[in-house]
Image (spheres, rainbow, N blue to C red):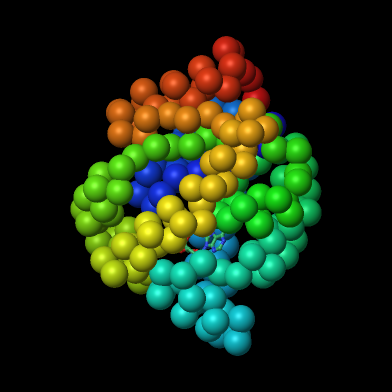
Length: 185
Ligand code: AMP
């Protein structure tokens, strides 16, 4: 099964992604993690990605698509995966035609996401999480990623869940909406 998790930063994508990974035995891949790893490299690409992320901007579509396709060629992703943070633009969604089964949208308000992020403990704090960068990212999310929801809705692939409920309830709702009963790995 190939799943996509969509939602603004702070909507609980990585929490739900790791629960789904456990439940469904699928690989989990987050483009945010990938880019944070590349940003640590002392290379021109690493520096560029770091600057872009820290300013709260999106990595250009062409570069993102190239990096994601390279990762997904690895044998561990052959059977399926949960993608978190990608696609972020309609261009990415249109170009990435990989037999996606369902797209899970964790719906939380901007206010709730901002509140959650400001309470992330220091161990989890990220360099790209200054308040200004977060606000810019939320603004960019609405501009570029909201239309991605419509793209998948038209294809009948969108599953919308209320991301403000309890973590376990959200997980149960996702499993139910995926039509999974006693899924075994
Ligand atoms: P995230 O952890 O998903 O919030 O991603 C952190 C940062 O990585 C984003 O603010 C972007 O700069 C970059 N990024 C992650 N996924 C994408 C994507 N699909 N397209 C462009 N940039 C991305």
